[in-house]
Image (cartoon, rainbow, N blue to C red; front, side, top):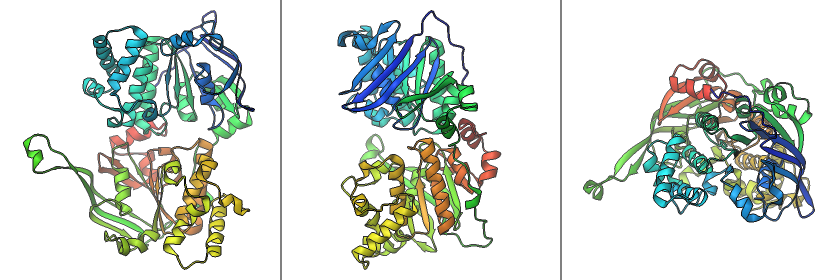
Length: 541
């Protein structure tokens, strides 16, 4: 449990921000933001993507290139916006640490994590190379990474998401700063890893007596961690106060919208299960193995075998949703790839009574029946294709007899059905980068549904979206399921999304099914200790 502590009451706040404004050319993106942080206090800056949270935090240390920044930012009674570059560099890292949102892009892929942490200790603390190397290992151990000496020699891509985030925290804390700015430090992490990262930050804060500015759109996380909350909308502060007061009784309409955006089941879209109905998708004794290299002399002649999925069995009927939950590495994505016929497997997978044959031409008709919506539409939508080409691609492949005009008509009808109507042909010529995150996910759903599938595999479809957009996409998926009788295989680590959408749940741990059953029973009264830990970490138990 993350314990809150009352902030100290110094004569002046540690950080004071008054009338901060940030603009790019003639566009102002941060408009008169003001707040303060006391020593030892935990403040959360919340809002949707585009609200100005990250730009505000980066502007405090003048880390926003080509931006015009004005206003007043005082740290320990020094004006950060008036300091020269040398004086500001002395504060960055030494007195204000920064944990960036995505460690895979923030960490240098060419250097080990130990070298990158040691570099901070050398530059900021004046340590020798040997001292810095030992200090990097000690910091990794302090942040809870197992085998810190071995992990210090690892490159970022060799660590899990949680380990990379811990390494970023170790780097930010290397010089023992007085203020830590954490920008979405738990985005896309599993519920249990999220809880561990938050507990780690709280423990380190108490040990070091530092203040924390947390940037997040996750209100459950904010409720458990912060002392006070500052809500931003369109670059402005719309509400501020103690976290319990603001999130329990919000005064601003935008804050109420954020609080009410937790995903939930829509009763009007519920369809009762039909007894004796044949499943649209079923798996029996599904197993997936990967070859792995063996060390020593024996590795010259043969490879070892790693079992990523052990004997999974399930059935999914028309109009129903089967949620598959588990931590990273539990086998969720492996299961999805096997079901989609994209990963060799042993056992049986039947899609509407047909089996995969591992033959491109023979499996083509089956691929029309089962489609997929990936986690990140930015990477799954081709940046070189227009909206019309992306959504209509399935028709060109599976219905080549359609005339161009008929194909365009179907594309426009499908876009309208997913809540993204295009009344002008010019809209169909736009590219993915011209749409918001929620709009791109609607495009991904339209692309999957255009060929009228029976089964849809949803691979973390909302994990990269804001809470309000997440709610909209979940409502859309529930409506489409009710109207089209779709069967969903939902892959996710978000227990709230499973609770909102799934009728049945499969829980995976280390590639093994540890619990399976109706969603209401599994999530309300989990029998397996691992399931209990997952649900508890999500704040849903």
